[in-house]
Image (tube, rainbow, N blue to C red; front, side, top):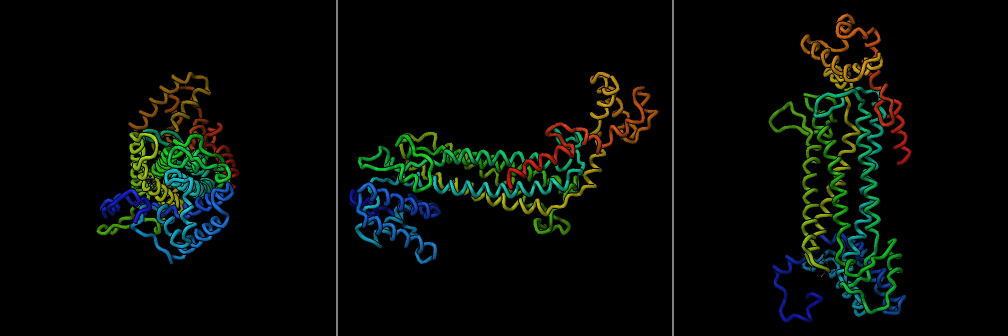
Amino acid sequence: MPMWEGRFSKKIDKRTNDFNSSIRFDHKMYKEDIEGSIAHAKMLSKQKIIEKEDELKIINGLNSILEDLESGSLEFDPNAEDIHMFIESELTKRIGKSGKKLHTARSRNDQVALDIRMYLKKNIIEIKGNIKKLILTLLDKAKENTETIMPGYTHMQRAQPITFAHHLMAYVEMFKRDMQRLDETYERVNVCPIGSCALAGTTYPLDREFEAKELGFSKITNNSIDGVSDRDFVIELLSDISIIMMHLSRISEEIVLWSSWEFKFVELDDSFSTGSSIMPQKKNPDIVELIRGKTGRVYGSLMAMLTVMKGTPLAYNKDMQEDKELIFDAIDTVNLSLTTIEPLIKTMSVLKENMKTAAEKGFINATDCADYLVEKGLPFRDAYKIVGNIVKYCIEHNTTLEKLDIETYKQFNTAFDEDIYSAINLINCVNKRNVFGGPAKEQVEKQIELARSEFI
Ligand code: ARG
């Protein structure tokens, strides 16, 4: 029988109960629910709202439930309405009258808001740990490739020479921002709503600060209505996770391209690739494709949660129960994606020669050729036009800037001399881009060390 049976003269319809029940997913918060209840019992007894004896019985009872759930000797009752009801009724089964005192000055509305905040705090730390591991792997890969010349692209057209290290370091920046965003979200999750009760606080003399401190929160909520009806922090975390997935999806897309025969810039390790059921030659990058696909699912959860909240009047409404499946799924998805792509990147071979060959085609040193003329005293716009003509000539004569002889160069402009060849040498082109944040070996090594010092 549900705890609210007093008001009702009929048993709940099974379909209604199944529809209403959240235990099949909110059981994930059993630890937080128990920890929260222990702190609540301590506070109630400290404030003389319940007896010390009741407090001790409640704490022992809750600890025994925790042990039994962890050992598997107690199973979640699928007919319970939610994890909060399940634990409270199990407690009363075990310790009797004292168990019925636990819910004094508390509502499931502030209880669920508390549990979800505690659960998210732990998970934010876990996600950050997984991002950190990925960053360290990217830094190792970058360190090995500070001289690996590759074409940098705009519009998917070869644009200017960079190194593979420089390219990977762009992702390190994205993941560093992701960690900062998680830290900022953590601050707003780290606010304790307990004591808001159903919506209007309580007449009991609570010590909200004490309970919050017991549970490791840095602040308490300021308004009891907001305390139970705020799910901004769930939306914020979904948004943070969506951005992480977007970054993972971008690198996944690049790995799909790079491992194609058209690029062949990288080769995935056999243990992180899959085959085809019909085409014997195939080696497919399913894992990164799946990460790209799952990004859509996480965006869906963010949109769903924004939509759930947009029409809910204050304060608590049952719509808000939808938050859990959405955020739990997003957390599982981002953790799985992070922990799968990390070893995939670690074990992936970089085909440096192929990157270099690609860099040698596509005139990616044309800007450097123009800069050379600028150094010789020409205005940039004139130099730009001259080099445009040279590129056109090279395309028509199926040659490259490197292979063009000096006589031909001189026909385009007399300022050209033998030193043009060193000016357009790809390694020199990269290393001359020695501006802070640029691809020169010196700069990238500096960035690798800076990032590493943040994480070790
Ligand atoms: N299972 C509910 C949820 O997740 C807990 C709060 C229910 N409160 C209520 N008054 N029905 O939101």
